[in-house]
Length: 114
Length: 114
Figure 1 (cartoon, rainbow over the protein chains, first blue to last red):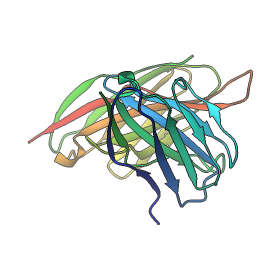
Figure 2: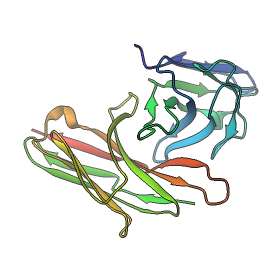
Figure 3: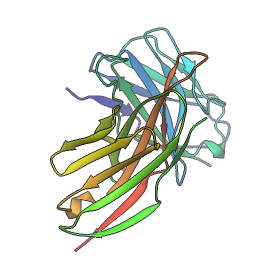
Figure 4: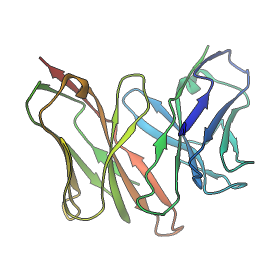
């Protein structure tokens, strides 16, 4: 039982390049989330999904797209990376309402955009 | 929107007790979470409060007062490994959409000294 995993762990991009971050969970959770964490700003929600085939915007969605084709996977895409997207990206999942709906986080992806 | 305040940094001595406060302003309150985050790692779930009062889990306790918009995390018998950031997060239900969202504070960096 690996919980929430993310690939890659580190990435350096040049401005304008694209990439996809992959998140996978093996807890059969309905809900999945993408956050970014910047110094002094806490975790901010980018996009989230309440089930396979659904996605919704969070607090800071601009410049990102997401897809949830399979229940266990949630992909975050950057079509044209900008230096402002340099951050640590965390994926999380939760059971969507049963019990406390606690969010469990992956190890993070450290992205630098030059 | 929501406003969550917690101290930026705290220092305490090994073996002592430390209290980390969190105040919040929100409508549609639906629960408060505390997470621990070691440098370079993912946030890990510590505690959850939805009703007023104290929840105890070993060396860690969390208190909530909904009427005051206030919570604290109490760490007893501090150990060096407790040096980490502690994130307060408030869940609220939007009145118009019914959507539940988790908003994180910026975190309190705790340094435990010998």
